[in-house]
Length: 234
Ligand SMILES: [Zn+2]
Ligand SMILES: [Zn+2]
Image (cartoon, rainbow, N blue to C red; front, side, top):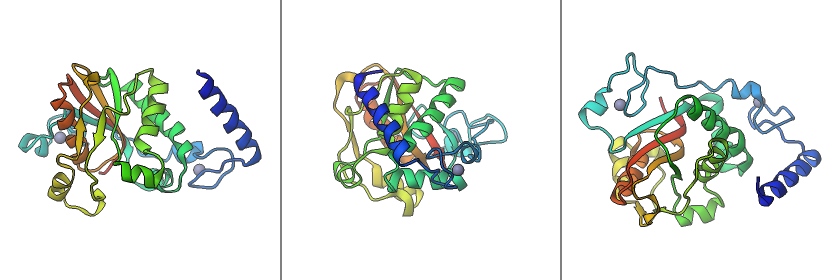
């Protein structure tokens, strides 16, 4: 633990004493995410499509991956983007509950310990600078830092950048999502050359954003690109 970590820990401890945290979902006093609510997350269980990680009835390639596979080595997710987890992610992203990254990133770390993916270095999906300025933090980077702490993997936060502001993916169709993020990312750093990269993001819906990141990373000659997201749409 570094001095900065220690100071943060002490600061957090004092703040918790003065203003005890409440669970963002059920409001119980004690922590931002109580164990009862965390246990409500519905985990993504196998069998999965080995490529995109979509739940299947057998572990064969899904029809989408047979037809038009995403240009990424593989995607895995911890739990479904529904119910309590959806609510928790909303607080994490839009209500400045940055400390939620601690339990959520740990959850991703626990997943990775049980389901290891090829990874030498972790890269969070970047926000565009304008969005970063607006929100004040990149939720994917916060998750990646906690994930790195929990797994011991190094993190590269600045090698991949979002060079073009994109519309929120939420209201777009599958095709529009692809076009929206196409060419939105650049990787100009030599730091990732020949390395096995693990992308980290909060939510995966169609995989279009992860694919666009993967294409940019491949142009920078990385060895492989897998992605791990906290949540995924069903
Ligand atoms: Zn709760
Ligand atoms: Zn698939």
